[in-house]
Image 1: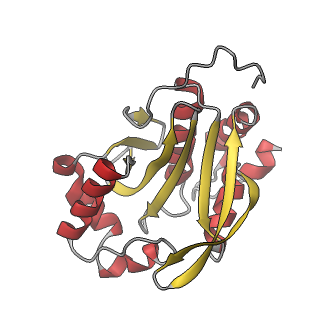
Image 2 (image 1 turned 60 degrees about the vertical axis):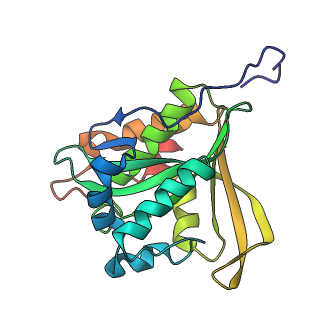
Length: 224
């Protein structure tokens, strides 16, 4: 990171590329290719709890889900990315790049919807890593944000685990599903990324997992 930005020219708009890791693939959402599998992973009554703390959802019909994804892409300038298991190609969840300010090198990951098969897996962790690497390494972004309902302890824990730093709470930020929402803000910046990247890469090493895929060292330990 440098404070001298006299020659800063902004960044390319993100979320246009397929990113492939050892366990995960993230790729831009395409209705014809992804809708059915993505809805099976995060839609319907069985997955309604995924959307509890979000201001949108749940999506009980495939048509409503498709219309939502189309609307936020066209009107909200979101870039939705589908998360797949590399080995099987199965769609397991999604997240979206939003509040994209390419001219400042800043973007937020939100609408993080992990299906039951994705939660607490190496695939989920690598998907977030791939997204961060896409922003920082490939596109030269300066800031990567995570925001969530301050009542959502699981999301706040995930932000810290992934390496985002807590920046504060926006009180009375919005009315969400008929109740007040205070929003917790987290971010990582370009000067944070080199150490975070080393920690991620160490965590992914095969020897960090036993035969039952249980981690031997936590991501935070390796990062520190």
